[in-house]
Image (cartoon, rainbow over the protein chains, first blue to last red):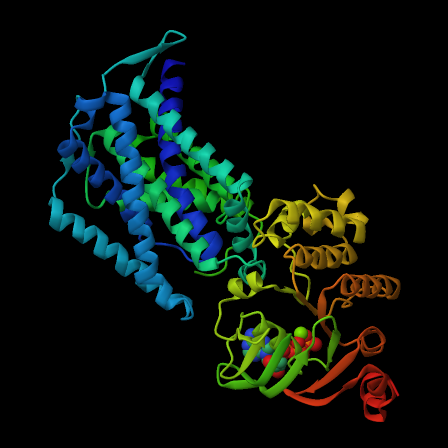
Length: 301
Length: 234
Ligand SMILES: Nc1ncnc2c1ncn2[C@@H]1O[C@H](COP(=O)(O)OP(=O)(O)OP(=O)(O)O)[C@@H](O)[C@H]1O
Ligand SMILES: [Mg+2]
């Protein structure tokens, strides 16, 4: 039981991270029918920017642990969001009318560019987050000691996802995003500036990915310039599992993947942890080709 | 109010409009008639800014709009109800209507328009919370028109509103279009149902493979032998 709860909470925490990254894939796909293959690298950039700001600004010393980390996260989200907007302008907008393959190639190019920039700036070795920022406390829940950081992580992804959900469901801009995802031409006829919507989506998605990056840094303590690759792939799988283009689907897919992977690692085999993600994907795609909450079949990339 | 001069529009290398001229005066209902593929939707989409002309100009109240973006054109007061309705099917009726009012910033105007369209289409009021995709075809057409009106337009472009509707519904939709026009909205109506459209409209244009071939008052078009033969079934 203890093992189960530990793995479950761990899975939820990781699942929350997958979900945050998956949202970036799914929102961009929803509006542009494009897989932003550079998204995983934006997540890495978030992790590195978080580290740099953490070390250079000393916010944690100045305004306390929680406030410092919160502020740090907001800064990283803002910065990665801006990089996302620039990415769309430079790598995707000029290819809007070109065929799909050009955009895919451009996305892969952007991915390589980001990963290598990180390597040149920060080096190819693992970098470590200072491990004394968050107190190594554990919270006692029903006699089980759950690490505080895990609970904070869960809380952070929950808050971010709730905020996103409310934004998309309840605000005028959020409704416009949903409209543009359904029918861009009709959205334009409503007077919606679809280019602006695309920029907003390319801010929000990367911002959430950047937040996930800093969360991984804090949770695992070490980061690497290629980590965006595996996380990006897993999160992409999560988005497909949930139904690509569908926002609640990405959240659900991320959580499912995190939990299954974490439980699988404990009860089946740790070595097969990554393979389990693909297994889940294959099973779900056989049962429901559109993903759990997806309505339309994904067009070819 | 709306003036189109020598408009050429192409899809890739294929020209779909070969220099058309068309005018709609304030307060009018003007209909644009033509067979499948004649270029009716192309004309409306170019007015709305979804397509860019290769040559020619479109003026709205003497301001050139042919270089503006689609969303700017809506803000000027030109709303389109597109062919095939294109309601946002996974959004609610209310959300569709809110989107129609996207460019309207004054909350009072939005409320006033909402009451007006609910009086035009009481059915929509009942179904406000329902997803648009679950409405019947006729109700979706009502929603598409209502959504267009929520933009508070000075001119409404309607692309085949009668398409796929039962004759009784067509009658009622056309009666509503008349009512909309009488409330001060200018209308450019694209139709294949020539008889109904000409009965409603003040003037009409006939378009054939990208050229305007006839332009006249509705009465004259209704009695024109060529029109009778080609569009009114003899
Ligand atoms: N997206 C497109 N790409 C290429 N050609 C197009 C496209 N849309 C329309 N066309 C062509 O342009 C011409 C005019 O089409 P348009 O849709 O304007 O006709 P229409 O008069 O609205 O016909 P309908 O009554 O069938 O709606 C047709 O020959 C059509 O094949
Ligand atoms: Mg048409």
